[in-house]
Image (cartoon, rainbow, N blue to C red; front, side, top):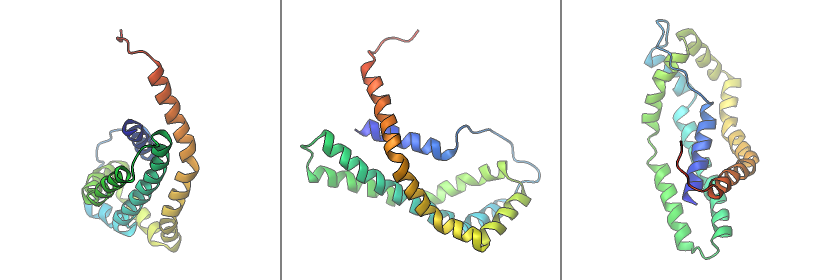
Length: 170
């Protein structure tokens, strides 16, 4: 079950990242760290990430509990509570500030100063603020809508992996 959860989490993380990443050096007209930090502040990035992580883990915990109970009816409430505590510890200790710092050079590689300024202006606007306000609910509803399909795909991959005998690769 842990492998399945890990596989699902990896798939989810990759899908949220948008696929392949291209390495691009920071352009001379790139935004400064302060420009990107200002954008993150306007977007309430830390709070958005925190809220999204909490929602994601809450949904995964709930759905994983259901799956565990189906596959292991003998699982005890104590075991489930221990898994819940582990999830809560992970969320509580998640390095959001460090992640935001790691994201700054990525934004600098992909956006010019004028683009960061335009994004900051948009997210400072009423429409931008509404977008930011609604995104956690949109994300939560999207996860509920796509989770069954993702779960089916993960189950199929795991089933195929279990059916294939281990053989040396040539």
